[in-house]
Amino acid sequence: MSRLCLSIALLLLLGILVACTPGAEHKSRARDPPPAFCLEPPFEGPCKAIFIRYFYNATSRLCETFKYGGCDAKQNNFLTSEDCMRTCGGAERPWKDL
Image (cartoon, rainbow, N blue to C red; front, side):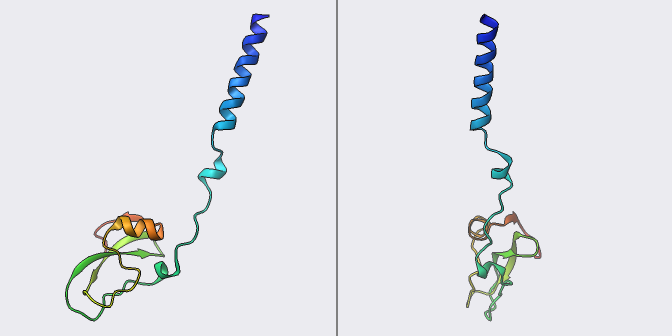
């Protein structure tokens, strides 16, 4: 009788574990597409300063650096890679294309 109780308890615990574990559908769920401005190319602007900024590269799906001139910024222009990733969903790729 005790083997039967132990088997039932183990099956119950296994069932609870399976029910509480997120399935593969949660891990592979596609992200929402980034905002439309994230798909625009980087824009240096007409000014001549050189500031290192981040933009979302829709082809590589990464946040990459570019040289910003200091005025007339577009929306795909971020001070930090974290802001870029949070907004557009890319991964950081520092110092690319400098």
